Image (tube, rainbow, N blue to C red):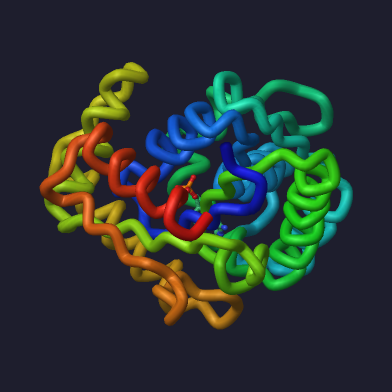
Length: 227
Ligand code: C5P
């Protein structure tokens, strides 16, 4: 059982969501997908037809948006203004736009505060929580007992993304997906506010050669050791 916080950071396509959910389920802990929250705000921005270069317009939308993220690892719901947007936020339009929205400092301030509130609720209830994103160990939960940085070779990440996409009925070429993964990583790692990076106290777990069960074995070992 987990009582504290596990911070799971890393780029897309490392299997972060799958292993975070299963890790939380196995530890009877809660689960928070912070990427889904950035995606929900992005959906709101697209619905309002705001200009992705207009940080003020994006900020106004983020201030009004009510984003709620469920923390049940079996059913991690994401809602925007009360509406379940779990399917829409995985779509291509949101995936293309999300990095620009997530780079707006005010958007991050709003969502980080909400994420910290969700973590505090879990700790108050004496339940552990696995939180996945890009800035969890550094910004959202700097006191997390265990910080993981998941990586994988870029080609493997693109292939995993394609398998995930086609399971959800979307088909894109491996080249397109690889280009998208690269573009998003580049954008997320070079933005001014809370860029994606491996911090010194995070343990790097390279998933290139591991399947989900293999990654979970490593993570469960680390939780027993340090979590
Ligand atoms: O994890 P996921 O691919 O759903 O995240 C979507 C995007 O949200 C990322 O590419 C990144 O731009 C942003 N994000 C972030 N900080 C987080 C989680 C996600 O900036 N903690």
